[in-house]
Image (tube, helix red, strand yellow):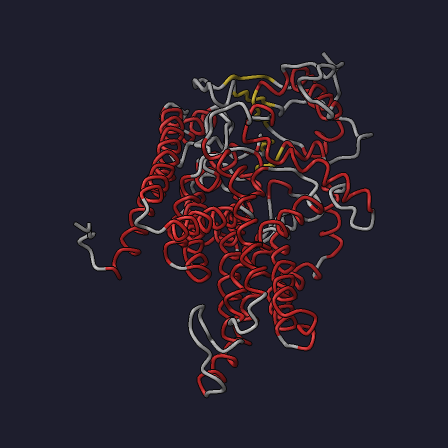
Length: 577
């Protein structure tokens, strides 16, 4: 007796995507306004977004006076802050409003992963890839779910927007390639030189422009989004050979890419001095003319993935984590199968070229993007891996589908193995989500803590603050706020007393743990003794010249919050304690 699902076939994919969306939103929305904790970089995005929403100026008042940051903000690419500003404009200022942008971006990345998989290999691959992207648990850091997409979608960071534009660009690119070759789908015979073929080819030109434009928007989300352009051109070259230089496709992609970047370039050129000055704080991250820069980056790339194991890569091989082992074992197997298929199809001269394109594109995507990350991006942050996770999910889904087709859906092994592995993956991610939710439920409520800090502050005066508290204090009516980071942007020869005299704060808000360790303790600040020493000098200044008040609010997460009233400070620096 044959088992049939009592649902029309055309409704099965939408129903499954609906269930997957429910899983995703159920994982990302609870406690979103309080957990994960607000940190310094998140407020660096939120502050200029709020100013843009309220004043129409893309500036960052937290860094007012630093190369005209209050008028023009060049530190972050603009695409993500613009969306956060739109959210503030529609729903008001708040942590939840800011993080909803990330949640929606993550959901779009999920849907576009399905769409790209469907376009390349069919609905089944698309659905499985989207499922893996939303459930594959890789991280071992306590307090996180371990599912990269979900963890990245719960914070205010621009990284989660990159795969949205990258995947949308890839969908346009695949569509354009197939239309430029007559609109043929794999498995259909060539219709010859027909009006429909000419129409499809004419639409392909627009598709290439859109693909390039979306790659440009990915770059406006973060600079590493530009690596997509390398992938698109490489895929065209492999698919069509050297004759691609005689076609319009690469030039149309480049044109679309440049058009998308034009507004940002025009904005930059209005004050290039401010751009150079603001970006000087990131000097050392780019040495594009130095070959040792690339080699050094490549050697250190392994540490980008240390978040799998909480900082120790060796531990990843000792932990029974299904997601990690699936990636480590099945990615090479998937690449091998794709390569063998490409080699086999290359021997069949009568085969429709679109049959080969999907295999080539998927095989190329991960290594090209990962190699660009490894060579060019010196900052080995785990967040940046969101660029490649959708393609890892697609490769794993392709391999699972290939194995099932090879064995036949009626094969007992295929019927048992795939659901069993998928059930284990979902179970493992559910454990991670449950653990994260338990921690989140006991986290300090951000707005309650902000209110407690606000009641300890004199009203209507300038504050020098630890950045995580900016949003809460702004919600409670405090406007003239500066970041403590400004102390570290002055030249090393400038004393803390001189910096404080220039900034002239009436009060200071900071977490007490910044002053708790000695600068000589290598565990406190490995490789960054200068920053620790600066903090100790800052603490000495506050003790000598400001009156201290401890915020009366229990906060095991943020630590002891201290408020210093510095209105009577003389500007003299006390000895380091």
